[in-house]
Length: 174
Image (cartoon, rainbow, N blue to C red; front, top):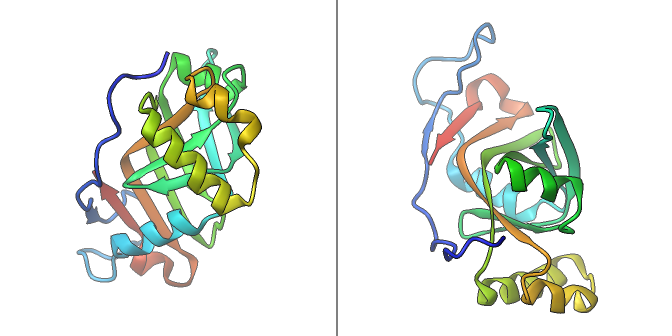
């Protein structure tokens, strides 16, 4: 069932630090960390995203989705009977990753169903524009809350730039 809370307005910038990666020889201190804008840009521009949810038997399920990075949250739609929707109904924790592994942004967070119809309308308009995909056949079910739109609220994010790997590996906490 959709969550009654409204998706919060734009979040504060997360705090950057080094990720915990024993054995990789990451430098000490914060010099060279990626700015949040670097991650934000890649989250906005990615065409495809990978989402990993947890099945009832605790095994992972990963699937590619289209979505939007909007006001500090990742929004995507899926059929209510899809594996990922059924997984999220039981366990809201998930991981979302951008498509380009050489400039990866990985979000760990919680997915909640969006109940705000105004946000669902905004999602449909922006989604259609981004993907040049006609959503009119889904609109009624999405706006009547029969089909879900999820907002993934990150708790932590990781940024890895292949060209500057060790010096730039960054973790952001929200």
